Amino acid sequence: MFHPHRRFWGPWSESPFQKGDLKYVILDLLKSGPMHGYEVITTLKERSHGFYAPSPGAVYPTLQLLEEMGYVTSEQRDAKKVYTITPEGRSFLAEQGQPAECIKSRMRSHWNPQNAAEIRETMADIGAVARLIGQRSRTLDGKTMRRVRDVVAGARGEIEAILNEQP
Figure 1 (cartoon, rainbow, N blue to C red):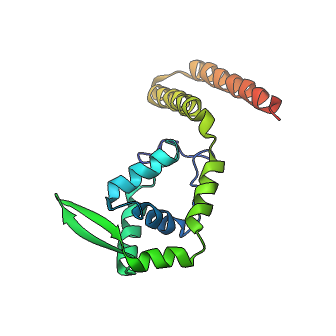
Figure 2: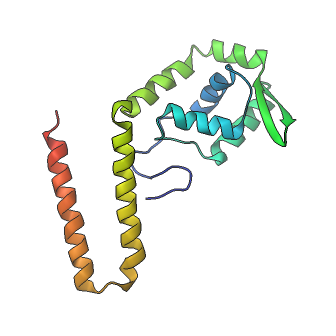
Figure 3: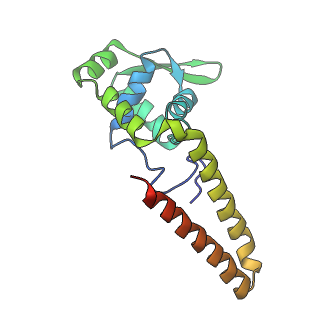
């Protein structure tokens, strides 16, 4: 359930991107100015209200691909590789019919930013419970583990009932 680069795995944390979308989003970000890879990751995390942060394993190869395609250039600044969109990259983005705007729209519809803080806190609580159970389950007897499971199942049932009340 826990992943070091994304807070949680599961249907509520799946990427809003489809295969190949990340290159458009990165090019669109670079239109506003040069960035290094970590800035790309943190900017995407901010724009998704903390619900999605692409892994370095997705961003850096995409930046390298864009550089190989001639859509970005890079230079070393203060021991960091900083990427800048090229005129070819701007043309490519324009020729694609604004896919970055479609992707941004998909991102906005993927998460409800009005509930971002509540969702983050709820997911943090769920993660804390999962870690607690994981840490202690090896030393618990069967009776105690069944009690924990009953509490979790009861909470899940109550949550399902609450969510089913929503239109």
